[in-house]
Image (cartoon, rainbow, N blue to C red; front, side):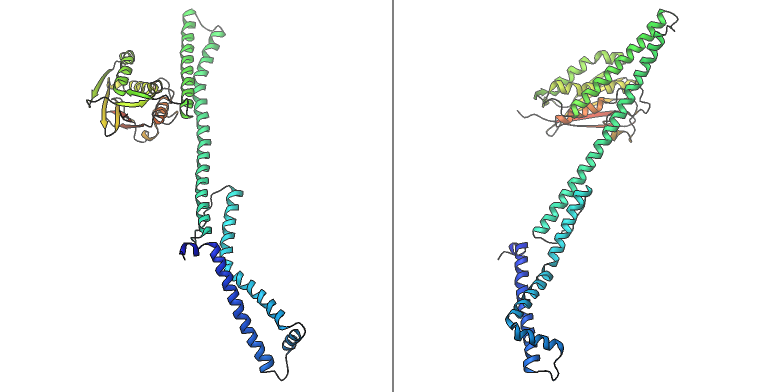
Length: 370
């Protein structure tokens, strides 16, 4: 018989049943011989009360009912002894399940056997691990929500406070002349534009990271796509006093599957970020490569280095390498997070490298087959 089936709970109870019968039968045989020798074969000169009671039971009730009662009792005792490990393990599993369901916390059960109880314990451990993972994700989600609310509150309150302050100054007729009033009105207007951009970025970030609309993918020439975006960014480059140089390190076209209207937002954010933080270097470089089955685009600026401690966090929402959170030196803190969300939805990868000389943002996409 296959050892796998012998080690099941069913067979363990069958073996316990058989062993209990054999042990009970052995006990009855030994007891019968002992009683027979002590009462009939070697009678005591002065019988003890126990012997007298035993004789009375045998004479008035009969030996068969007595043997049956003793046999049943001995069977139950032996069956309990032979199954106590199984029952104890089952109670341990039950206690573990109650701890998981009542306390809502992870709990591991030692896997001691290879039978159904062992499989059950192993599955409970898997369920417990998943529960722990879900609890951690829930805590992370709550923390992320709190951080999002804190970040939004800070970034909305700052320009809004300025707008209210300037409008209050104008409303109370504290301006000395129309020129000063126009000056403060213009500042309030610029702050309003900043506020609208922050709200738009926040909406875009929420849409992208919640799945957004389904992507309508098409074959896209990544080289031509990026070159067009660079052409559109020329006015912004001129305003920053920067030039852009493109390095094409592969002769073949880089075709990918992408949704152009989604992907354009990602690369616009990356290019804008490179212009904003790379003005000191006076130039922007973009290179195209193919590495295996991946299309690689590297966007480089030569401004201030990003600290090594900041690199792992720059794609997080509201994270800025400059600590002041000033809108004069940084954006809403959502641009890179939005870019990463869009690239992730395209099954691409984005990473950043930075040293004293240059800062690179590297994107990778699977190359589309013909």
